[in-house]
Amino acid sequence: MLHIFTSAAVNYIPKVRLLTESIKKFHPEARIHLALADERPENIPLDMFDSVWSPADLGIDNWRSWAFGHAIVELATAIKPFVLEKLLANDGDRVIYMDPDTVMYSRLDDVLATLEHNSIALTPHQTTPEDDWMAIWDNEICSLKHGVYNLGFVAVAATDAGRAFAAWWRERCHRLCIDDIPNGIFTDQRWVDLAPALFPEVAILRTPRLNVSTWNLSKRRITREDGQFHVNGEPLGFYHYTGFDKGAHRIMAQRYAVHSPVVFEMIDWYEAAIQVTAADPLSQHQWAFANFDNGQPISKLQRRVYRMREDLQKAFPHPFDHTGFAAWWEKNGVHEYSGNKSDMSALSMVSAPKKTIWSALGGIISRPAMLGAYMARARQIMTEKGIKGLLYEIRTRI
Image (cartoon, rainbow, N blue to C red; front, side):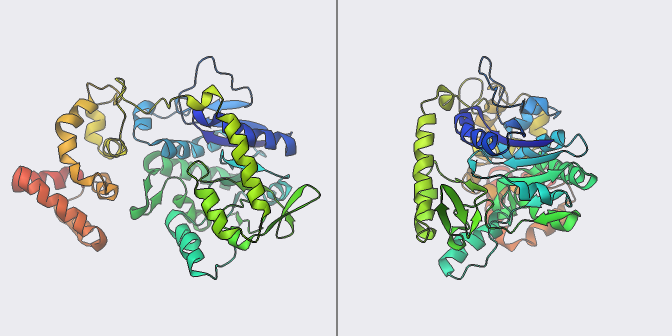
């Protein structure tokens, strides 16, 4: 059995239809599933999917407080390995994940053939070295920060190695699926850089026809022959319209796809298609986890602090209640973390295992790039709470 799934919140479902329609065209035999990064809506048909998995369906303890600790993209990526693990239940099945802003343009039989002899298949952002310094900065260095492999696609077979990979990925994303590039984490994606080293039967798909997007357009020429798109002479498998809503996709295409005029026809088509979906009432559906229960928006900083501090999780097991964590934040948090509003990486201090003061200080000193942020925070605590307060913070947060 072939399963293909994607992950999105309710407001993105109209755009997901572009993906599901393309899947049904080229792989009508596939079962299509949704990892729903939202609460399941009432009275909204989701019959384009064979199954829908929301956070409530994934067996996560205290799932609402867990969801609270994630921004929308973090949550949409965090639930991916949970659903992958569910779909790998039956021996012989094959599972493909595709981002909601991708469109399939031909069958992926080469991917399925790869899974006959491998358990995991990944696509790198780049498969050809850049030879222009601007492209090196935009593409290769971007991959160093965000991940070698683009996790807008992954294919996994229901084997021992495939299930072991899914379980490992799920465990990592359960605790640390965050956007924290300075500390080496970018949602679910950076973790998978480790997969070829940690697991057997990992295939790296270097064909130019898969996962084509702005990060590799400099080395991939798209043409159209008899209505079929080709990439460097091979049939286009799927295209990833990443960063489209913010306009970044067109900007980067203008920089790197000048040799492929047909790319701009594809972009124009996608832009017109999503403009139609914008009229769908679902596009205006508010994310279920956006606000406290009184309608006050939840900031990224509030989510990160709650996520990293077990004492707050225990004190406020229902964080969406505005009389609990939100009230604490207004009284304490807004002052305690005011220096970190623009430097989320400094909050990594609160996620480290509790150790002795000396081992904690040694860990800080060993990271000179972060020392300035830590020292500034220490001075602030000293001013407000004195040396005893600083020692308390080190003991309880580090």
